Image 1 (spheres, rainbow, N blue to C red):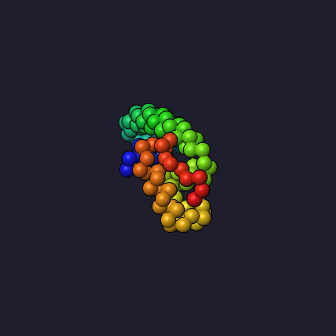
Image 2 (image 1 turned 180 degrees about the vertical axis):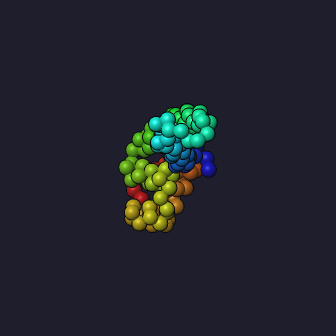
Image 3 (image 1 turned 90 degrees about the vertical axis):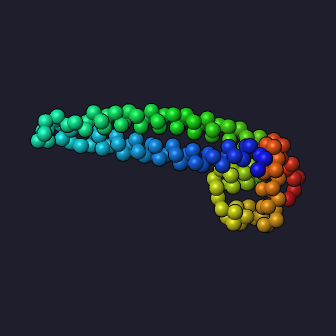
Length: 143
């Protein structure tokens, strides 16, 4: 595949999923840390101070930093993808690119929703992937 813009767009889905995963781990660890009543109220647990509290605090801090970094990367990549998408003047082809490369909607569903034949779908995909960038795609006037 020659089109570097497609590679960026295909990565958006994975970057979003990775960001959500780190966010979920961070939230889970935070909940684990702050929802335990004995630790919050200072009630004794039978063994003196809770040795795990400092470890949990450190884990929450580390996950928060990782999440912040992932979120910055995700937003940066999303902005790039949005600029590329907005550069496609034809609404129909912009929708095709969004659905297929970013949202990863299955081919059959795109063909059905956009009322495309197998041939038209294949030609669109070929034109996109063989161009150097989205700006250089030879978009047809009509399908």
